[in-house]
Image (cartoon, rainbow, N blue to C red; front, side):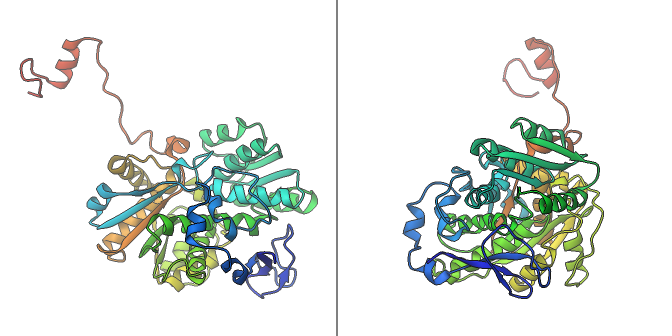
Length: 416
């Protein structure tokens, strides 16, 4: 029996075949994959997972593909870093960083979702893949499509960081810069997807694509010795990542792979684009779309598709949400780099900034086992911090110049 039962509407519950569709034709609600957990439970085990490949595909039994992994064989299973220095700075006993700055091949968590999306797109017979993106997704789609020999189109806002634009062009997809923000790009791509037989990973393939984020939850639990953390802090753009981490944790409990899940799911956004966090902080169960204005461009989605469901997941888990200013984003990037040697992009600065706030507010307590998700590499967003890190000390190529500059003594070898 197939492990995927159907696609099901998250609003009205109507079921659909597991094809390239993403919206309910009855109520226009979003669709997600419905699994046959009883069938999965017969074969899955900790041992089977541990004996699997050193990638996210060790969890293939819980991912929406029918056959073997054909795209992204090395994505996922990134390090879980025990952040002792940052924990001491914040006053925490046990803090971990899930470090997707080293994910394969494009240094962000998007390699997970794209590996699933393109594997499923191939199964459904697509030859051309595409996406609407704030940067990291486009990089990942372009790279995976190149490796898979698939035609590729990526659509990006016209003001994207230079490193992310280069990170598309190098793989030679067709890169389309749209004059507008991400929401303008996404609207255009929805129209194109309706007219052309292309697999848009975050539109008509979205139900499968989004499931790849669950692997962050699976890896977290396994790398913590098969235990769920007390607290997690998750950056939010569309809100999908947060909802899927919550779903993944609950799947492991339902399948008996962990005994309990008491994890509180906390969401992080930048003030310049914080529709979900603002709703939470104002006590609303709905969000109001905004026009993005923040250096955290990878999170700059003003009309988040999963905003409502992110609010719901946070409420169910008794978690919290908060936001940080652009200055606090930069400080978060610097703090992470200077305590743990990890250079994160602006989304990482958002995560660390909000983590810091939640600890200060007493929402995350000293004894809580806490995991912060660092989702992308700082080399992609150098513009955000280049003016905040100082300049090299310049000297002449002589010992005299060195000692004069650093006021070094000539006998003891130390600073005088």
